[in-house]
Image (tube, rainbow, N blue to C red; front, side, top):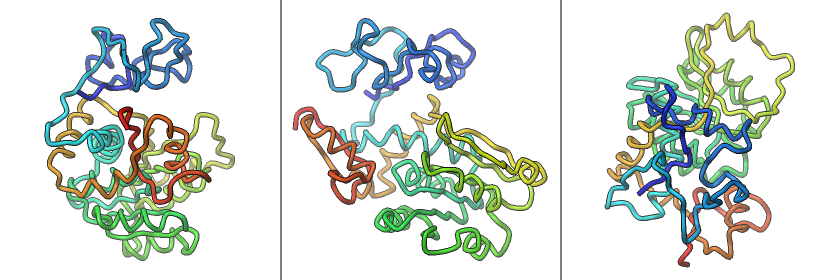
Length: 287
């Protein structure tokens, strides 16, 4: 079974729509007592909110999804980034047949956006990264990206306009949390002349001085937040993964035991002391 990290109240309008990410009971950014598995402190009783304990507290309002038998534990671990990819690219961004989309950042979230957009029939998928993302950009091409851009070697806006014959893209998805304001400003300019959609995930305290609000409104840009996933997107993600339409093993790159959790985290973040080439890692309690 796949346990959603949201523990909703079960009564509000958002929960009845399967949009647990908007439920006030899960809003741990503002409510320190809010419950999210993997986030909530053990100081909150009954303290069993972790992912690798022998015992886990599952009240009646816990949200579970059945994992298809064709998925390995490591592949099933992609359900969260895959559900985010489907939520942001398809359900929130509206990517579909014939769409053009710019995905910024080739991490596990960005790569899952590539798969979601490809499966939905996007006509042109562009993904950006940096020098250290060379391997991930190659993986993105295998998964269906049509064009990759190294933003440190090329002028990304000029390349995007060249690729789209000067039209720009229909949808921009920013998967570069913590990369500053540049991806958002690039996204506004990379969108087509009228009516594009931009999905962003900025840090909570991130500041945007001189934000070009006039430029955004003149282009009729729809700005939406990349914030979690819904019940529907998780179900679609598990279905997508179970088809094995894409080579999942090139994303599930590393496996660690419990004694190596610190190294696993550093590997995903590309930090010193982590393993090279990591994209999505698994921590196996039995290893």
